[in-house]
Amino acid sequence: MDVAVIEHLYDELLKNLADLNQVKQVVHHAFKREFEILESYDSDSLSEIVSREAFIFDNPFTGIPEKYGFRSASVEDLKRLTYWHKNSQYCWLLMSAFEKFEEFLKASYREVNGRAGRNLNPILVHFSENYPGIKAAERSNAFGVNLRVAVHLVEKMRHAIAHNQGTIENPEKFVAKVINDSGIGDNRGDHEAFVSQFIYASKVFIVEVPANNNLSFPLFHDQYRILVSYLISYAYLVRNEAS
Image (cartoon, rainbow, N blue to C red; front, side, top):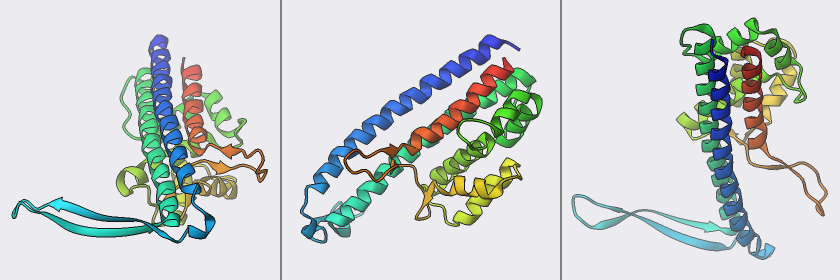
């Protein structure tokens, strides 16, 4: 095993995640400006129709542009659509973040085990069962969550984003699958509460959420940053223990 290889893989992962986080900041500030415009409308006009759009496609058989749809929207509609659009942008970035993490994990597994690993769970089990420091830190850490459950959560989020635009048709089954696939049997209620906080309206939900009710100095939980922190923390354990 070449320790320098794993060190390089870890540094490359951090670089890739930092690049994605920079894009996330661009997204955040762009939507902040959009929300400021929407918030400038008087509260009495929230239901007023302010947008009417006709959607056109180019008919290849007639050569004539034709209307295929029409939509109107109130200020309230635009707020809702903008909110979920921001969430969608974060989701695509999280999907990319997990894929970079998975590349690191598979490459590290190949380096320490001498053969390629294809599936996430056997790789996590290998690191957990063969490196006591990883197994201990999975369960006991400053986050107060099981890191193996957290990794499986992001993996299942990635799948929902890639294959169903972030929609989770059955949240209860989703939560159960995350926990069952992680193989963690204790404190199930805590794990269910942990996973469920990232689901809202049957969708992957990772935009910033209020952390207090102090309107003069509002604080927010950055859901995206928290999820990426779980991935970085697990990669950190692998880098340290496997090296």
